[in-house]
Image 1 (cartoon, rainbow, N blue to C red):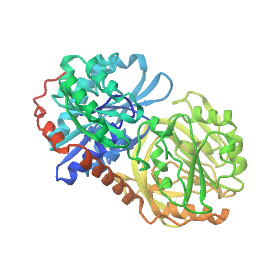
Image 2 (cartoon, rainbow, N blue to C red; image 1 turned 180 degrees about the horizontal axis):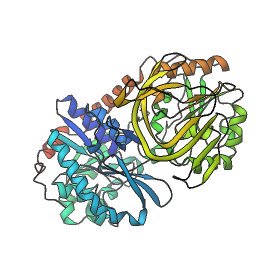
Image 3 (cartoon, rainbow, N blue to C red; image 1 turned 60 degrees about the horizontal axis):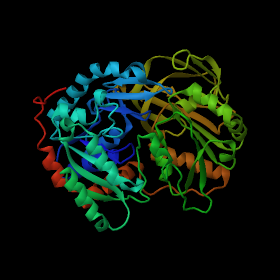
Length: 504
């Protein structure tokens, strides 16, 4: 198990790196995170939903994404409420204060999923959540050291030294833990160090002497290396998310609306990697004034974020600018571009007017659509592939479809999807997350924008899927060079055998 002293300490990154490092050694490895709180999710081949980070970790592990890799997902829908997904299926909405009541029911689900996954793989690398010593939550913690104790697993603790106070954070975490949990903490990993690691030696030896826990490595700061497939919303404001310096003199300027409940920002990763694209966040009209393309991304709360657009003035600015620039809506962003939204399910707001840029009406209803999809762009025949997660059912009342898609499990039963307005060919939308992962489609869109706006666009020479592979290979090199991976494997060998766990 890989724990952190805080959120954002680097747990997801270290797990991703370890999964690829072990896979390169020929180890059959899989990732696991018992419980996520995130609106950034992914879809399994059989229509299950789980946290986005596990999708990247599964790629790193060279393993098929599996519901068991993320048995509990909490998707915040308000300040105190979350939609609860268990083993890939949404089961209800919980108040934050009431989730403890559900803990007793999900504990066996979590342990069963982990045990089953361990039976099918040589090594499972678990990711914790938040801080490992949240002592106010230990009695209902199903993702950190209480799970390690129940499953009979060793754990390592990642501390981000770039934040400062790292020794106090590492020692304080160890000191606050009750002995029954502390005994499972078997190593420290220092992350994001800048400079000469030799300068840390005295402090590291002191930490080891005080705790009896070895330091297994000091990982250098990753510098300007862009993190792909992020899960934690805290990471969205990190450098390079999504601001990208373009190499062209007249790059294509893309403004992404930073919705309060933004979901699946990984949709933007392919744009960030384009050398002739300058990407920025937009939270006010001034941020989109000189843009060539505005992207309205996905959201967990379409109606609430539409109200935010109106409050910021963006709801007026985007339609005004659409007369001369391109606008792309993805999932919730697509729904906002339509004329009406009928929502008695998610917000309970009833019928709400959209931005009116596409002849589309969206009705929210069950069951939730969770599926991988593939097909083609209708006008060009360019193949596309991605996934859908939504309650909203957009229905075109005019215009023309943009794509033709079929669910992953039933290729051949294709349906028209998305919309392009006949009178506003600059505006289009789709429910397909990952639509921009498709190199030919993305490049065609950006060429179109560049030509219309007299900008410079030369596509990246690296296909997006290759860029993802290069990313995880870089992370694997990172841990192999600075972390004792052999020691981590030796710890994994000490875990209780599947089926022989101590239990909760």
